Image 1 (cartoon, helix red, strand yellow):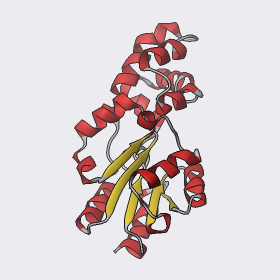
Image 2 (tube, rainbow, N blue to C red):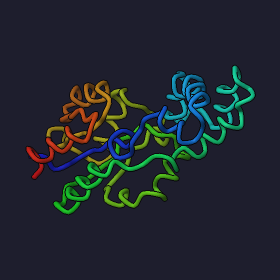
Image 3 (spheres, rainbow, N blue to C red):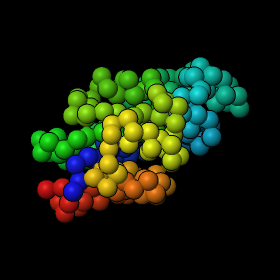
Image 4 (cartoon, rainbow, N blue to C red):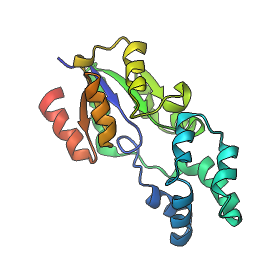
Length: 198
């Protein structure tokens, strides 16, 4: 019997599409350049892991495009303002809260951006606990972060379902005994809710 539900944030509760996000902030040409020099580099994951500070990242990302240094800084400090919630999934979160499920966040997220998200979106009030990669210096899909959330909140894996839009993250969840459900769109999450959590 499922008692605990874990949500990823980007791609599950907030609509994470890097190129569309950047196009809301800049023109198409600049958005493509910024995505290549920021999100598509291994340093982006280090921001999520909490091992790279924003100003350090600005220096790294602007090395090959120094003329865009201020744009990079703005993107890093402001992108949360341009991320819309995925309303269908947030509504399911609300229903699960009303049904008294224990709700948790497990997300790869930059610390400053996540703090801004907490202020901006009141649906975070539904959660019993949150594990954010930059806070714990661990990152999905590494197994240690899944083991950490199980220990931190005393969760039984077989009683716990995890929604994430990235298949590698789901595979590691399943390896730990958590019921991982791949939710690249709201349809998959809705189907699982209707069939297993009603």
